[in-house]
Image 1 (cartoon, rainbow, N blue to C red):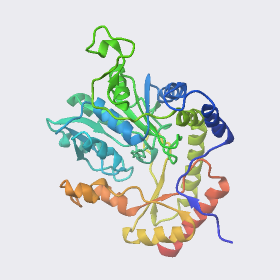
Image 2: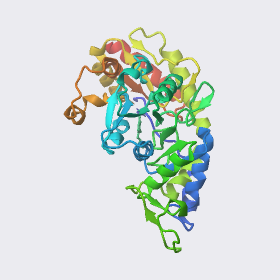
Image 3: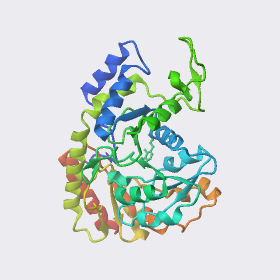
Length: 382
Ligand SMILES: *Cc1c(COP(=O)(O)O)cnc(C)c1O
């Protein structure tokens, strides 16, 4: 009998999550009702900030945050190519230009020592990614941003629940985007949010989520509006998250610390079970960082063997993945003028990376079986 297939990531849904969704379906609101505000309060609290604006995806959250940061036609945003395309795509939606800075070779996070050289008079914002759930170097990034008057938007799609120098993800940047896709720290199916402390930025995100429409009298041109009156003041989108999804999110976020704790236990099992394999580099954790372990990425030392290793792991039933193809390698970005070879650390990371199964519902037996299969594959092909 072959060992069970293990995915690289997956959600953990219990009966209480199902009951929470069923309750909403029996009530008065399917979309924008009390469940949205309830989840927003819980996300803001978990992130250590005053505001959370729930939206229908992490990508929408980035779009809202970049809009609120004032990013427009011809403006530049500094980010890292070791990410999912959403991080830079959301800048392109606004006519802005992503400017890439290479990653640190070991964490895959933006290399803060290279940021200042990328700043121009058009730079408006810096968007570090907390790759794999390991927060970026926010002390360095924030110092640069303050010095040059830039806004920091964290792509924390991987890292909600993690912390940096004792501070929770959510409170480390001017605005923080999270994603609640099923493989992410907690889920609403599809979904995301912008977390921030600043009232004005939160307000801009909230308007952008619903067509740029305001019902706040102070924001309106009409001085004596009737009860029916609203005004559209920005060109926004319909990025609303439903009450159905938010009820799932509220039930899920109550278990976020349990999920993160379990991810940390699985990471510890991998660290211990794989540490003696000379042909692999294991993930590093920087001082003062408590990662969320969204991903557990091993890197083969010999990149010419990555494909064989990946394929052998798949044969053995580990549904491993590779995160990420560097954004500037995609044909669309090549069409914008980016070239292979431009960001060597990101390219090296990608060419050696394999993401092992990592999710909170993994049992000790699953982890042991995953470790056994990784050891087997390393013996067979590395
Ligand atoms: C998942 C993810 C996003 C976007 O989230 P969606 O909810 O899928 O739109 C953005 N950035 C990173 C790094 C992600 O992993």
